[in-house]
Image 1 (cartoon, rainbow, N blue to C red):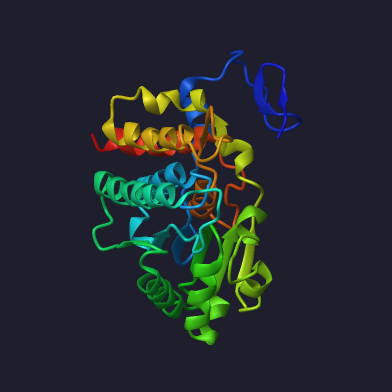
Image 2 (tube, helix red, strand yellow; image 1 turned 90 degrees about the horizontal axis):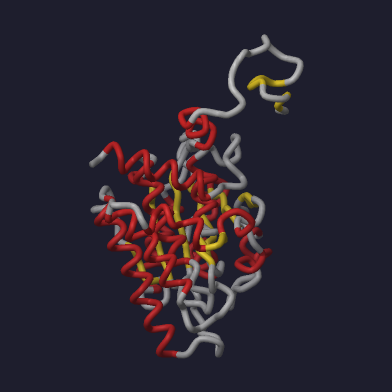
Length: 294
């Protein structure tokens, strides 16, 4: 769609609109508001956060809050974090231990404050590996053509591979794995990305979500300065990642890139889902919910 001059109308279509040279606040809000139209089935999220990159702290908080804000909290069948099963030298044993605690806090506190997740356990994939694999396996085994499972690969693929290996092969046709970056796909210690696909699952690949969702931290000042504690809590998770002392590449940034895959699912996934989510999309979704539940 193109815009002609100051007339708010597609070129060559419709009637000429006599109006203004700017868009009203209500129109801008409507244009930025994501449409909630999830596909059939449930969603499972496997995140890391214990790897050197701390971005899953903000990504986890945003993902959980968006599912609640969309009214889709009951469709979340599994959530696990710290899925990097083999520590690398770049992060010390002590720093990794801290990350496990921070990720558990991002999960549990966000879920409690936003509400709706009382029946769900947020698993530490490395420290509770058996329970994590069994829980994801059960979600896979519950899948049908009318109730497929969409797994968000927000970290290394090993937990996904272990759960697929432990599950019924005839259920794999009903499993779809959403990915946005080879940094996750190719980081497994036990499974390659091709081995994941060889289980017979459907690959759902969307563009790199860092493009619009790893931004200058000032773009999240709206959350930092918001009077609602639930919004401030989410901002704090991204700020903790920004001041992380394991890596330097998050300095000055607020990164919830993996949450873009959740936003894609919320807005339709393969049926017109938002492939390049923005901070404005996240903001509108969360604030609409917060304003309606004061």
